[in-house]
Image (cartoon, rainbow, N blue to C red; front, side, top):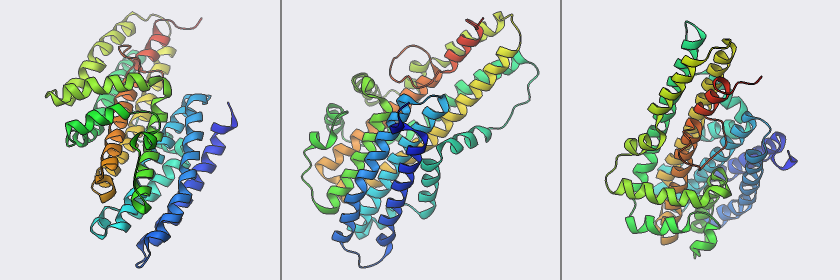
Length: 364
């Protein structure tokens, strides 16, 4: 693994970005601070945001363990949420009517903990799910699979519901245009003609978008665009989001398939207990990631109300981030379920993959 995506470097870059954000936000609460004073540090902060994205993206693709890769995911998600915090603070400073939209210090502290120590966050999230009492190894594995599939679906529906709600409040023509520009250099495609704080607000929205694109991966962009178009068509035609997810994930069929593998498994109980632990860990980590996705959705809901986001370029930028976030969340949930029906994201070994590896093709 290259040093660019090393855990140490990502921690250092995360700490530097958070420190820069805190410095930027400190004077925002001081009366009399003008646009020029806020614009300069905002412009200086963008390189730190981009450096974090590059390092975390390298960690996502080059991480040596599943925890390394999950930590890089959390840093990209938390970095995107932090970008939107900066955008909302800048917009609040420009327009007094929107000052109530700025994030509270507690929000910043939580994002700081996530982005500087994602491994600790992931471990804590898994531990917080509790330990179930089980009768035997077969029952343990069956219960873990059922709980994981149900939990992943529930997490996608809860957080995805917020994203879909935000999307469907946008104009259909705007979403069609946004689909066209998903992926690549958003600033170049938008041809942004803004200045001062307004330009910097959109810059940080674009920075959040870049981190979400890194989560999707370059190879998945074309398919994500096609999937998004199909999902939007279904949603706009009246398909309920839970129905769309159930049709895509097929969790009932996966649970039945794995139950058959468990019933037919005749070797020692060790693989069943390992499977229970791995599936529990997988579900806990997805829940942790979903929690950060929800913070991004909250940030988008705030930023989209600000004057810079109501410009033509701002509206498209917000729509593109919503679309990318939906593609990541639904794709990541699919990846964790592992139903083999769609090739979008492939960052983890899903519930089905873990079960198949341990119970169908166990190592010699």
